[in-house]
Length: 615
Image (cartoon, rainbow, N blue to C red; front, side):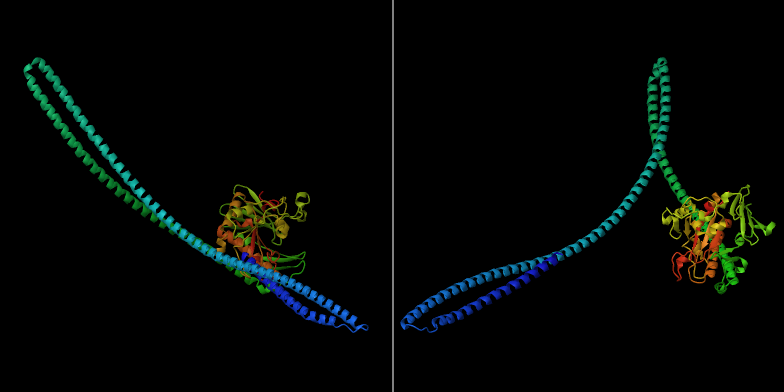
């Protein structure tokens, strides 16, 4: 910015200098022209005045008058010439002064321009110096950082070496202390033995002294003998003391040797134990790894088997009703079409196409016993009994639709999972309609209302599945109402399984995608263990490519494939899952092109909406 200002000032100074030069040149040219005009005009005027027209009358008088006039004219011309010269001189002086002033201004402008150029150069030099200083500073900073990192690494190495030396010193000190303790113990033992020997010697000497005293009173002649005996006893005691000291030294040396041998043996035993423990740990680790690998292989084999089974079933279903047949299927209002070998029914009602299917095959397994009982009115009661004593009782209507589904536990408790029975006219509570709800108002953050399964943590998934309705609502709705009306389902938060991406025209799930849903399955199992009446709806969706009927059937298969995967891979009870396909009705992105985000499956907990769930 300073450089720009300096350039502008220099440009303005040069412009003003040029303007002043032009003004000075104009003034000088004007002055010269004026002088030329004045010089030419004065003699002409004098001639005109000296030659007046002839007048009649006296010649002498005329001559006198003419001479007087001529003299007056001459004087006047001289005066005018002087005045003109004075004016010219004044003008020349003014012009000279103006020229000097202009020259001075031009010089000042030139000096200012030079000053501005010098300032510009100084600014450029300053900028270059600043750049050079910044580069040098950056280089010094990098060098300082490098030196600091090297110093830090050296400090770490020194600290590690210091710690190792300290550990070695501590270990040596411990070993020396233990050795010194053992030596002191042996010395104390030897000193104790020497003290006992000395006490016995003193006792013997005392006994001898007593005997000598008794004999002294009786026999004075035995004094010399007694003295000799005492002297001999002292010598013996001294000799015994030396022997005991020598023995103590030998015992101390022997104790040190024994201690050293014991310590070597203990170290050897510790090393052998450590080696044995390491071998055992390695063996156990190898066994555990082998067991884990075998378990992983078995689980993978089971998953592959389940996946192959699901793929075969999907393939069979695709063979039953091909994409071409579905694309050609047309349903009018009130009509229906049966597809996939009779397992799915597509209806058009109130301008909307709805799909329903028989989910009983999801409950069948080799260990489950199945019994069917006929009821009045063409209804059937189907009882599935599992090895753990749990019974799933389903009542179906004449058109194979679910009327009631219950879970009977071995302790006698009964949980109503699905209740689609007709409204009882004597029970006003059950006459609640879905259009009585009013507008939906979501007051929680969007990321808690619609959770992205790919990026969500286990805690976020758990909060979404255990959350209450976003608005207070009475549990007064049937499963058919929840399946059919989205503003009922929208009362509950949902989890979009974006980690499961379906290929175009496919309901197949990759094994890696199933493994990514482990947290979701674990949370669902925990919730069902706490409340066996928990219910979840799995909704399938497609993009807008293809016919309406085909997309509806494809979305239903996708929801069903996720439910089968959750049951076969993770053991989520199938009776706590309901599936429903919605085709292209609720896209995330409105586009007629193929869009991966629209080919999705979502999971919702619907327990708080069901009128008899959990009782």
